[in-house]
Amino acid sequence: MRRDVFQAIADPTRREIIHLLSASSMSLNHVAEHFEVSRPAISKHVKILMECGLVVITRQGRERHCAANLHKLKQVADWVESYRTFWNNKLDALENFLETEKQQTRRRKKD
Image (tube, rainbow, N blue to C red):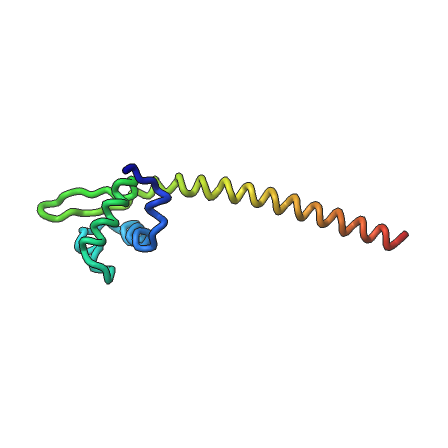
């Protein structure tokens, strides 16, 4: 199954893993120490993040080290930006409409 970045960030544990790894790379065991769930559960989360391209794993001896690949989050940022632009345009149009209504009401009261 091909996963995407949106599936990865949908889970709060995975978001926290990304946050941890954004500061520095660390071993899988060190990542697991930050959570109250089992190491196999963290391994599954890291696997999903790796499948989405948000985490890169390298072997250093017997250890697996994880590093964040944050440029993949650009897809999310672009998606959010499109909606931010959409809603800003809609709210600007509403503001203009309400201002026009307000001015027309003032004119009617004067007349």
